[in-house]
Length: 144
Image (tube, rainbow, N blue to C red; front, top):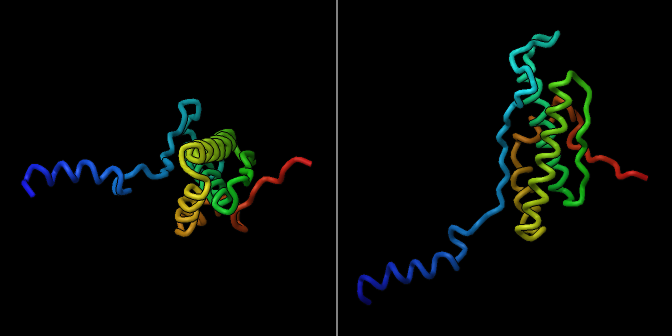
């Protein structure tokens, strides 16, 4: 086989082999909104930025863990706390729910659930949800 044919065959074979294929991915990046006075301290000494981030991550991870069990699982988005924390809860839950719903549209439900289960296997999610979900992930109950 001549040398120029090998790169040509690789260009044809790689995209169809699954190598480098598009995979489900969720972004875990937290950006504290400008409406949250991030440097302002609450009575317990934490800054609003920390309270927002802690709540956001807890509710983001709770949603991932709930949806890893059932793609139809409902993610709670309300919590108690100061304004920064309650906004973080809502934003984290809604972001995870919307991003997972988008993945389900792009990939099969089975593939997304496998990806979520892979995320759920690690310790990070269970540690991040502890401040709000001390007994483990909690789904919101459907309305009666």
